[in-house]
Length: 471
Image (cartoon, rainbow, N blue to C red; front, top):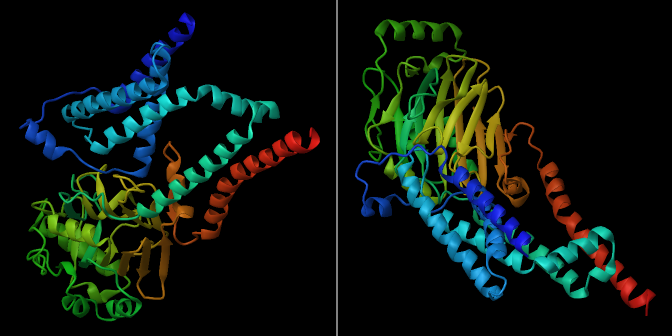
């Protein structure tokens, strides 16, 4: 017994070490300005991503198991579970409060909830350890005497319940509920200035609802007149002259300011270069150059824009633009609604010559990179392109230059289940040009059906052995 508990202490120390490294590394503490209890309450976030929830649960399961081992065996089982719950909750709360002293970390109330759930689950697993070990031993060795009808039925029901729960979580997690309303809008760069895009933009329109097919046709025929009459318009920007930027005509966006000044000679040279290379000349006199030396950012967070899209769970974005450089990396940010490269509501970018899109949902996470969407070779020339993006009811649609040139993606359990992998699937890139929904569905249903089929076969084998052959 002493040796058994000694292993429990070792597991406890190891689990605490892993938790500390995963949650407060690199231990670079600093006191934020204005730190107070009111500051702590206001800055506590709620809601993250499905992957974060799963990782938080898995991280604290070893802690719950180790607590079950080190607690005195004379304690009732219920006290072991409650002890795991309260210890996990107290430890997680302490960690989240400590994260206020770490500039690279974000304190989150949901982390406390799921960490506590993970610790409690560890206590439950320790409580049922003998039954669990006996069950898997019976399956692996093929010994029906280690199994029981009750354990097999519980395993099948538990597995089906877990699958249903997992599918339900994926179904309710395709929304914009985790968007941060205090993010800035940047055009031609990331808000931190480290992902510049080199190209030209003529107009940007954003409305807080999706467009139907008839409206999409009108957008490509008469974009300016269509959006000027649209009541749901929340951002309207037309770039006609770098000297006199037309501020948001919908008057719902903070003032945009140029972050760097580009010399007149540089602008003239770039305009000459555009005139030589561009395929479509009709936008040449109604466009503005964006580059590392010249890009736009709202003076204040775009609260109205973020909140309206978040509230409706829909949007449409119309963008007329041309790249000035075929190969750009980062991806280079054409449009960024974010607070930096690790905290994004949405980005539209260029990676090499491909169009790149990221959107934040409880599935895709705070960095919106799981998955990211690309359309190849949109920027393989320096012609102007009209890009329209719509989002509604779990569906993303991308239109390039004309309504018929359409790319489609729908968030379903079959296309989103890879988010349950605890590790990062890098890179998880969805190429919308050759996206095959059938392959995702086949993989999804295969992963679900195989374990269930194994359990049912074992159940049938058990019944044959137990009740027919030895009757």
